[in-house]
Length: 335
Ligand SMILES: *[C@@H]1O[C@H](CO)[C@@H](O)[C@H](O)[C@H]1NC(C)=O
Ligand SMILES: *[C@@H]1O[C@H](CO)[C@@H](O)[C@H](O)[C@H]1NC(C)=O
Figure 1 (tube, rainbow, N blue to C red):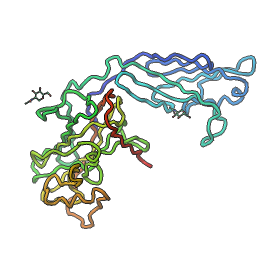
Figure 2: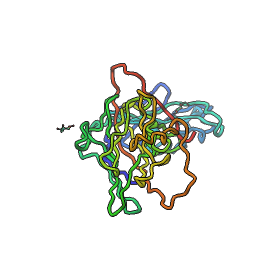
Figure 3: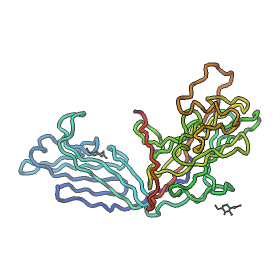
Figure 4: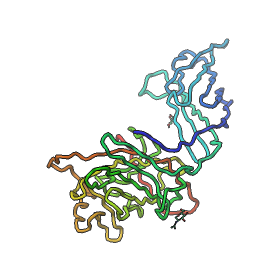
C-alpha cells in the first residue's frame, strides 16, 4: 500500500533530563538515547538481566564495591520504544527493567524512560490538497481525500474540532469500464498508520458497508453525485484526541445493478432507529443485517469485486474544553 500523504517531519530537542535520584541517567539525542544505570551488588550479579525494552546493555562496567554501571545506547525506533504524538510533542517511552527470570515472569524492577521532543513546526494544516491516488493492479484508479465544509474542494486543514464534520470522498476512475459503483466496505480510525494486532481502533464502517458510527453521532453517507464516488460525512469523535489519527478503509467496486447484503452503503437514521440503503430506499431490508452480521453470499459471481485498501491522514481532533457528550468506542484488534 502506498502512502502519499504530506508527512510532518520532526526535528526536536530533548526536554527530558535524567532522574538522578535513582542513579539512572537518560540522555535523549536526536534519534537515539543513551541510558546509564548504576546498579547495586544484587543487580550487578546478572548484568545480562538488565534490559532497556528488549535490549541488553552495550557495556557493563563493574565498580569497586561489587555494583556496576550498565550503559545502553539505542535508536528510538529500536528496543521496543513506544512512540506517541500530540499536537506539539513526540514522546518515546520504554522501560528499564531487571528481569532475572525470562518472560512471562515479571520484572523485579521497572523504571520508565521517556524522551520528549518538541515538534518545532507544530502540526501544520495540509499545505497541499489532501488527496491520495492509487493505481490498482487492474485498470482502475482509486482516489480518496478530504473535502472542505461545503464540498467545493479539498480540505485545507487536517484539524477537526470534536463534533465537526470530516468529509471523506472516495472515487474510482472508470476508464473504459462499464459503470461501476464504489462502496466503502469497512473503515476504522486508528492512531496507527499500519494496522496490526494490538492497534487501537474506532470502528466507523463495518459489516460490509454499514455506517455504524452513525449510531453514536451524526455520521452519514451523503447522496451520490455519481455511482463511481461516495461521500462519507463523518462526525469527529473522541477517539485519540490530540493524537494523529488515520482512517483506514477498504474500497470496493461493483456492478451498480447488483445491490446486495455484501455490496451496499447503509445509513442509520437516528430518528426512526432504522437502517437505510443509500442507493435505493425501497431496498432498505438489505441493511437489516447491519445490527447482526451480514453474511457472505453463497452464490458465486463470475466477476470478483476489485478492492483497494487505503489510509487517509493524519487527522487531528484537538481536545475541547467544553463538556460535550462522550463518543468513545474502542476496539482492540486481534483480540
Ligand atoms: C512499562 O511498564 C509498565 C508497567 O509494567 C507498563 O504499563 C508500560 O506499558 C510499559 N511501557 C512501555 C513503553 O513498554
Ligand atoms: C467553500 O468553503 C471554502 C473554505 O472552506 C471557501 O473558501 C469557499 O468560498 C466556499 N465556497 C462556497 C461556494 O461557499
